[in-house]
Length: 113
Image 1 (cartoon, rainbow, N blue to C red):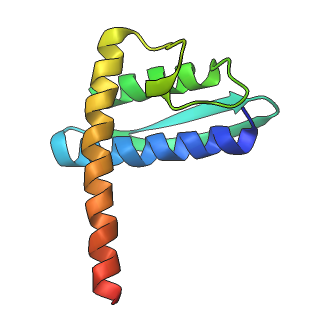
Image 2: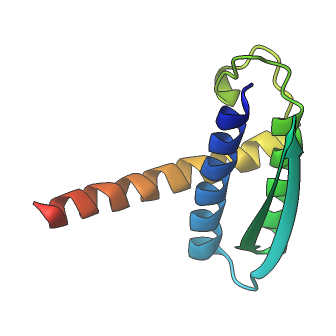
């Protein structure tokens, strides 16, 4: 996977986790993540609860280890790398956040027009 694709995937995870955790959890705290991928190194700071920090850390590790040059969507991957229970947690989070972020996007489009 290219570095641009990797960073795009990280940004997507950031958006989805932030939305889900803000709407569903309390006791959030900032944590910084230093991610190295190929020749790049970046830092990300996220304000999430403990459970979401653990799941996003796991997701970052799975993403870094993805063996595909052209990364498929995880749900369509022929060789899933997520443990089944973690996959279920992530799928729930992605469904919720995707729906909510989509509604926000539609709402903002309607405000402009």
